[in-house]
Length: 285
Image (cartoon, rainbow, N blue to C red; front, top):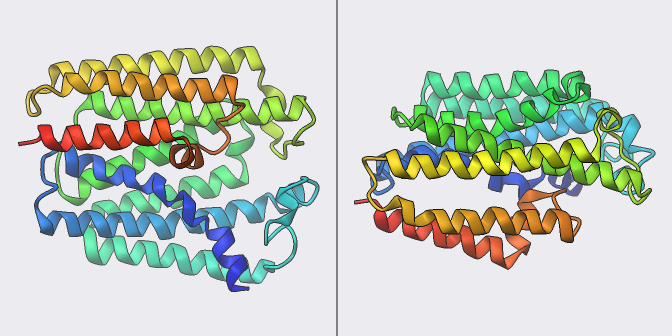
């Protein structure tokens, strides 16, 4: 049962929770241990909250996953975790996330974590089946992480950076939908998502083109108008390379289904991210 719980919790997806670091880094407070600790608790709260969401989402998808060639082996779909077990684990994880955010961070982050949990209840239940809105809900999760990280240490973050995160999050979500659509068409992986039938490859390609463009534009504008971090403009080539590499993975390697895995497995993207972080940290005075 322990293995089933660990598998459903999706520890490898915790990399998404690193978005809470945005406020800490760009407010130039990452050398302040007290604030580092508060943001760590925020990260921890989202780890528990995101795992809770995966349990709930898999429970709602149980009947669909049973007929899926690979997802049928998921603990909930295969019956290794009962309905009662899932509800108890979900409630426990959600409660721990809320307790951590309230006791160790502040009431504002508690509100963000609670919003994240509530939004995903509706997403798992109904909103994931509404075309276009589904990808906005997925993207909102990344945005809430950034907001929580800022509220945790009481700092403001640039509107342009918020927009960059929003567009990047949407790009990742749409890329995932494209992979699911293509896989479904090719009969390689029968999709369990009802919403997929409402999408079209040409539509998704156009959205990806728009999102990749506006992500680059908004980030570039942010580096230009940023008055706190000098020479941030020199990180633009790295961001360009990273996005172009991701597009290459989507269109030439049939990727995009698991962004968190591609970040780790693709050396080009991983090096780009590490290099970007190093340069940003060095530029911060």
